[in-house]
Image (cartoon, rainbow, N blue to C red; front, top):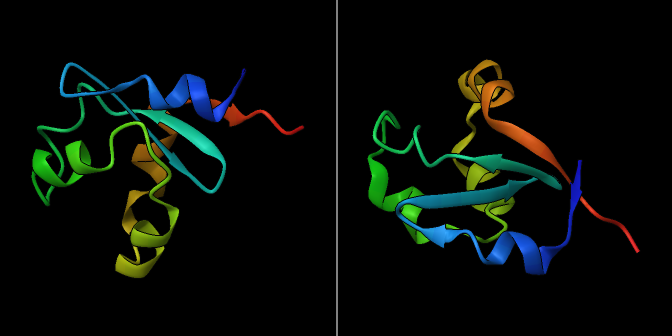
Length: 77
């Protein structure tokens, strides 16, 4: 499924939390409380592209978990 940046930006609350990483969209609403770094960091990036911060932290161990929460991709023009 494809979504626009505008559509993703609407999912910016604790009870409706989507993020973008490398043009993929993830619904982390239920996962945020399991996140090793805590829910606050995910809430900070809710509805936004957090590719840079994700890559800076080097989340190599997260790739298997991410597949469970992937909704689709950002719609290209």
